[in-house]
Amino acid sequence: MSIALIGASGNADSRILKELSDRGRQVKAIARHPEEIAKLPNVTAKKGDVFDKDGLASLLKGHDIVVSAVPFTASDPRILIDAVKSAGAKRYLVVGGAGSLEVAPGVKLIDTPDFPDAYKAEAARGGEFLELLRRASKNFSLSAGRASLRSRQARRSRYGRISRGFQGRGKGRRALSRKTQGGARPRPDLPFSVRRLRSRRATLSARRR
Picture 1 (tube, rainbow, N blue to C red):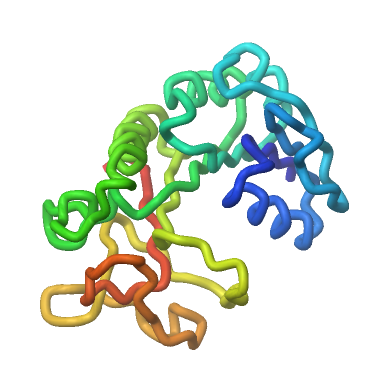
Picture 2 (picture 1 turned 90 degrees about the vertical axis):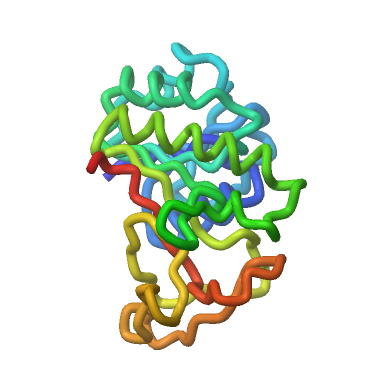
């Protein structure tokens, strides 16, 4: 299985790259400044521009899976999606924030009173990206995790998969069971006060419904 990672020198991207390398995956790591990409086993660094559709498609060609965690405000989702399509990749996974997750039926996290203004532009662009992914292919998806990354926190065993919502416990809410969480007790991870949201991670599927 061949994997291409777009934006491999960023905060989230570099962590994904390290994880893939640790698992023995062959990865083509793409960034505007490849010299900033960590030198890891099984990783080939390449120079690429997220706004150059043809150049990006050429770099992605021949890979089964494409992953990107480029900031939504620093990229064009249409260019990225078109490049992945042109390359013929089977799967495309976009790693983003939690803003598009539902905290209640029809209510997204970005629309709650406590959502920080500083993150709204990025979260709104992420929502637009999600809608484009849904229309593009059933094999294109967006993974929405917790709102912040903690470098000292050890990786847990595995996480549950949820279709739409940032789920919490309580009446009217589906909760990730401790079994699904791999035995880890959920704790709040948001840096702002949404007290009832205790899921450690939720995956927002962009598959067509």
